[in-house]
Amino acid sequence: VLTAGLLAGLRIAASEPELRAKLWSNVAYLRRRFAEEGVDIGKSNSQVMPVMVNNDSRVLSVAEKIQDRGLFLNPVTYPAVPKHKSRLRISVSAAHTEADLEAAVQTIAGVLRGATAYADFAAAARFFKADIAALQSAPDAAAAVLFARAALAAGDAQLGQRLVASARSIPLSLRNRP
Image (cartoon, rainbow, N blue to C red; front, side, top):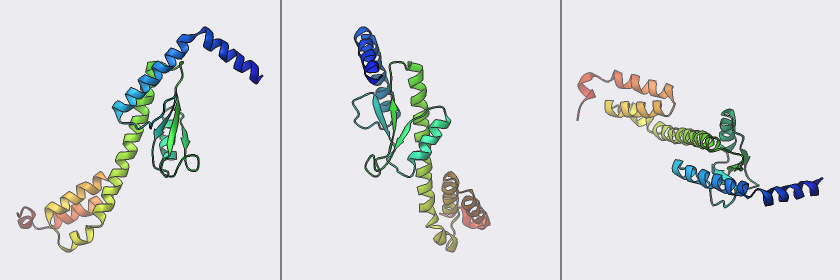
């Protein structure tokens, strides 16, 4: 059965060279679009491309979010790849249409942007949390508002609300001091 499948594949490759051309056209399109969207696909030279996540603790959740949007990409983690070089594997074929590929680019780039933004905001929240003690001991309205906005943007609503309340408790005469 295996030999028959290989022979059939070779016959198709020999009799339909346009399939190979379509495959490499799809690969070129996907590479270009990923580059335009800032998606890191490593140095792959084949129709099997890595979508680099480079975060072992996030790769499975990123894959799940992409799958929830209708695409299945295989997550690849340590020990199959070095630590902190986790990735998703995408396989391009001649059967994909340009619309299929564009939808995949939009989905993958959108999920990756969301995951990166969340990580950036979470890091900002951790940074600002370290300054809360100083803020509470010597409140300054402008600083309180700045920290509150950063905390809210980072998704820490409770911290943001506490800082906004702290800023509101500062007498008006002190709020706009130079």
